[in-house]
Length: 346
Image (cartoon, helix red, strand yellow):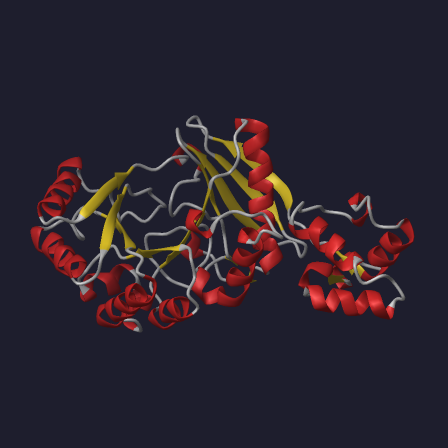
């Protein structure tokens, strides 16, 4: 039977797997053993389930597949960053990145094949969204980079950021299911406090996150606190005005008591004027937040150019003078197109 036509066993809940085993005349407790192999050890074949009887392994292989992601290409940056081009079971390609620093090893994870949005400064937005990633495909990225970190860096993976390809809040169910598996003691056991979900700002879904009482951190790609400028650089935001975004972030904080990280690129001639800084300060005063000033990574659109270091420092100084927490983040992996905004399956 063609592998692609078999149902991926990881799409089954534990209860559904128990029912399957019962119908096959197998012992139901095997379901937890199988689940452990799938979600704790992240194995890629039924043959590796060494405590499962061989006859049951054959049955599982006949009935199901494990559509794990496969490495298509791997690139290493001079700064230690590793970019992985990963092939999915249906031939689509995604990218994920592992970023080592002195105190942590961070994995940048994708949530969609392509992207649903149209941010003009981002290479991924040039790709048509082909489909959402399944929860197991998101999970597989974390398993894979975790193995990479041990192999190449001799260090465990410490942090996960949903800042790769796609808008995670437009793949809500699968992203949430993946995070549950990643953070669960019966999964990879990575604390949600070490996970950050980055969104371009979908107010309705931010409120849903708050209602669902998630434990991970929230980051928002803001880039301008002026509605007119934001619409020019992120056209989809015409549907989601800043007033609605601010309301959703205030709701988030009221429910979770967690501050929001505002991601902000400063571009020459676009958002580098003093009134842009004042607008950002005003926005930050309305919601507990910290600002991450991000270095721009060119993606071929000549309209977008990195602002001068002086302009970035002006942002930083004025934000700090207003008692707003701010950091400047310099991108890694630029030489292999692995930096923020550059993932585009080149």
